[in-house]
Figure (tube, rainbow, N blue to C red):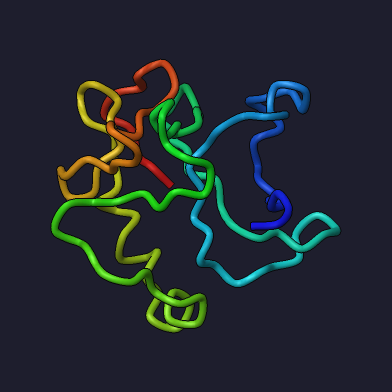
Length: 131
């Protein structure tokens, strides 16, 4: 992409603005742009959460910026923005998107990967919901 994406999130209670600059995170990019808090948001930052914490799901250090996150057994082209919305894909995916006992983000128990490794919740937040 030519420019960084602007993404609105509800993370103000968990992170300071200066801590977000240059942060590498996993983003759902095939979502329709939505105007949130006064500007168009072009995606959704993946976070892991439990009753006490909300943390980013981070890509491996060697993952290229913009690299697609993979999940073995779910290859193929990503759903279009329209398909994600019309088929309510997120409602179907989010219940099975969790971190394992090591904080690795997984879908139905299969790790999310990029570069040469797995996407992991900051601090290794284990057994958390990812959304």
